[in-house]
Amino acid sequence: MRRISNLAFNQEFPEASGLSGIPADNQVRISRDTGNPYDRDAVGIWLGGHPKTPIGWLYRKDGNRDAVLQKLDAGGEITGHIEQRSRRKGEKPRKVVVFWL
Image 1 (cartoon, rainbow, N blue to C red):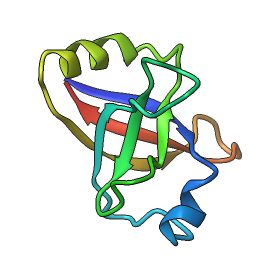
Image 2: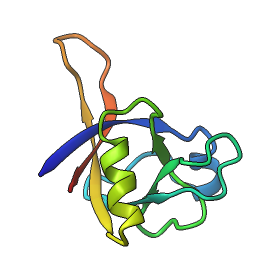
Image 3: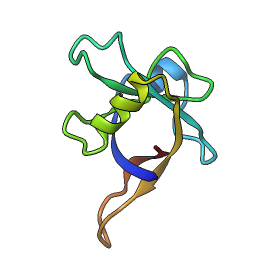
Image 4: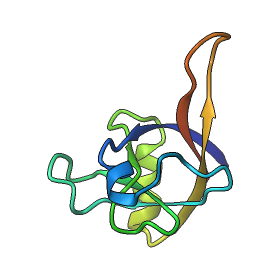
């Protein structure tokens, strides 16, 4: 099933990756961020070609987070991509992660 979640963007990613923006044809890998000191169940989003620093995370209260954790704990892999979306006309676009479970 196709899922969409808001991306909690990692403010340190641009400097760590050297990227000033997200490529339009991006691919991401979703997995546990075991190095996250603030959340032991952090779900990290890694942009293809940049495996050291996550581009962001799923929010703790994200409705998809429990299903993602279950699939990851069962040994599944989750991939997807990042898009810019806005809900209302005139609203500032935000980054979302689109993936399939």
